[in-house]
Image (cartoon, rainbow, N blue to C red; front, side, top):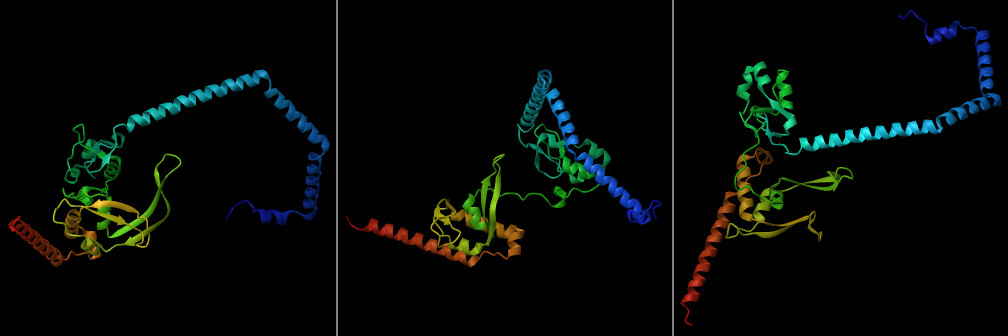
Length: 302
């Protein structure tokens, strides 16, 4: 319990006579402050103060101070911009030996201190060297190791990027054909910085990958291409994306994703081998028919 009485307790101890006397005093005080003589006196004091600061000497001194202030700040801003360009001039080229990600040079440092504090860290590092042939670790992983914690993004934690096959050089539309979900979104440049930002809603459309792949024609040449228009709705005249795709590359990538991707397994996507064998047989029959037609043309008399 507090030793001092609360405001309600203090009000209970004050008599009505004292309260009325105090209220009368405050009314007189406010009336005296609001009198014309007091207002005129205060206005005269403010005019004299402004006139003193508006003198030629005061104004010149103030202008000189503002010029020196702007000059100092301008040099500081130019120096900061120059330092920023020097830092990001080379781009993220340093490799973290723990999470296997690319970082800027100022975001990584040597991992000698971490090795000394935690000798068991060697079995969790990838022993990957950066551009100057030195092993480095990023600030994020370094902070976790210093605290004695395991970095969540470490390669040893199963966060390694999967190896990309050589045949996976797909364009944008070919990737859309293989995506289990297609996201339609509108990107615009921000007024400052010119970075891209999302404008409006994002429409997430589930896609049937196997149905899409089965609709692609099986061309005889592996380098053959077809023109595909990706629309938001089939009844629309305009298309959101229009590119040439390589059916052989798309089918090859679909088979690889079904066999190696956990996302495709969770979605239950399976490539029908009978469909592939059927189309391969049709292509073989077409090739035989074309060869026979060519032989018949050669055998006909001129």
